[in-house]
Image 1 (cartoon, one colour):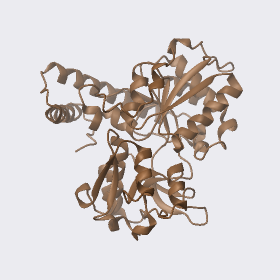
Image 2: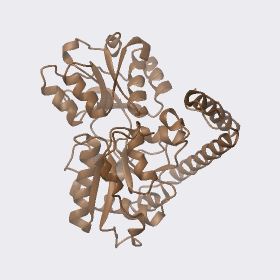
Image 3: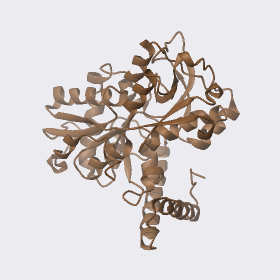
Image 4: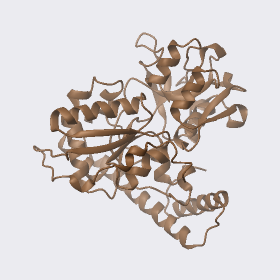
Length: 387
């Protein structure tokens, strides 16, 4: 466990008390004097957007928001689970944590009842950035190339595999190079230790790579390639086709057909009181104009630009704020309730698995859990998502 948490900033231990919240009213949002969020590494889009939101909270509500960078999904969620942070700006690791897969299939974790506050989909996309000096032009050209993976970050790793799948490639078709964090991986690309790394197109490390001697390209995922997209969705069901018009080497005049999913995704635990989550969500909605232009991608947090019917439910407190913003429907309500039921099924399956004397070996434990998980979802008539 210590290895997995090695990239988490120690300052998180100072934390906050989540009980500091005061009741929030629609016209009178009350936030605590201080809050803590976690996010991806310093300089990433997720970190920058969280900082922009924090400045709005300081200017509008007098709240000091600490944004703590952490190198992987486990490290980002650890302080949130311990009650030392209010929210985390996550990526697709949100979905993996909910499902209890990859690193979250370890006995220290299991399915996490994460729920959404707000998430962003903007002009950027999420894909494999490739050093221009490799000569790679299509995803299939990555065969035999060095592709970055981050220890303890199933989101980044699975995302990379999903993009490789578009080119009909698997991890065994490339040279996997492991790094301790997202930031280290992108430094590796600039330093010629790796040829490709996953990121959102607007992340600062990608822009740094663009101006480096190596340069950067984003091999396209043409939306007309139905077979390629079927392969993507088998590995990353949360991806959808998206035209990128901003990012490193990308402009409105030179768009690229890629894929995307919401990022950053501000998440909380389902156990957090609705009035706390409502206050934060309401503040982000009403203060939108103060931060929407402060960081690349922040504009995607608008209430009317939220991804509908995604793979993880909105917290009831966030739902209340969305309803007040006129951005909620009966269809979304039904979808959200179905996801709450899915989280309950996964939680019950995890509890039953723990009572069944599972093996102590990490790999055997995960293998057994994945079988128990599949059986529980099948019994409930719910899709597995990880065949």
